[in-house]
Image (tube, rainbow, N blue to C red; front, side, top):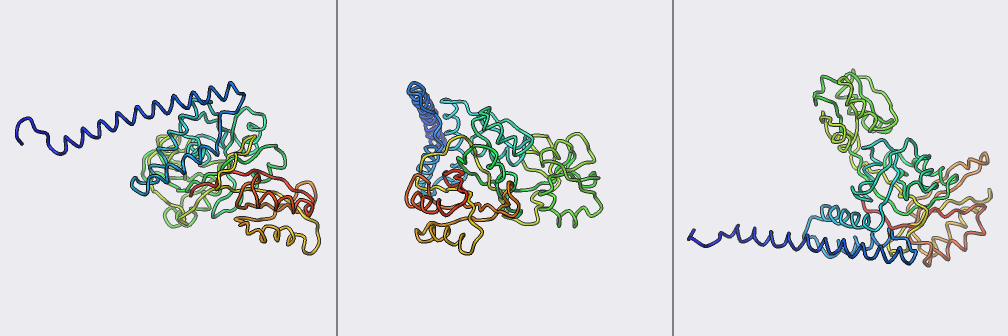
Length: 361
């Protein structure tokens, strides 16, 4: 190469260096503008956090990409930028079903970013308690698993606590077998949450037929045991492996691939409409022929899609049932607003759990 000239690679690297410099400057500018907006909101007495606005910004930015940058990576980068700037306006504290490194913890980090302050609690009801008492701004609770079904404790808690659903997030459930050494021959007992053990039953029977299994309160608690006992292995998440410094004996040991858990973000308020929303309701009807049909007909004639409906026993009265329903739309907007007003007189009980941006999965 002639003296004084740059190779093509060096030229491209200089372009990258300049783009990186611009990128940092743009992030600094965004951060400062967000802080200014937060100060204006404080002066006006307005809440600084707007989850619906955040989801709209994310979707708009993703639409600009047009497939050039890998979408999942871009989503993660944008979420972290949005979440970090949010913290500049108002530090956010979030309760989740702990301990650290559970799938609920993963859901909290996915939705709020790694700069958020996370508070692990022992039970689903504890999450609701933290939010209702306003010791935390939000909570993250599991509501449904694609294989195991509904998390009953979460749905039942809405009859006890005055909170709203403000968002949802879907987390793929990938189970890894973890221990201190990474060697299968060192394992004398496998610990995990009952759902995790059930989801890995065939793998365990085939690969560790003589090893005992034991149920514990969470996958993260199992990982904590494995971290102090070399004879114990845990079925837990990749985050648990990093958190508790464990080795991976085997990856993806779940019997059914595509296992996903849906988590709700709960708070005191429901976000404004975004145009891509979901609404959740509880209702009960009279015990007579056609009562449920009348309610569902109101949704059908307006072409409102129902993504989920199931019955739950009413805790206050034997043999009476509540129906839980997910549908498309936001309660503040037609046609859902009109639909709910129509069905209200037909219901013995009607409870709006929240309207919120649809999650990505």
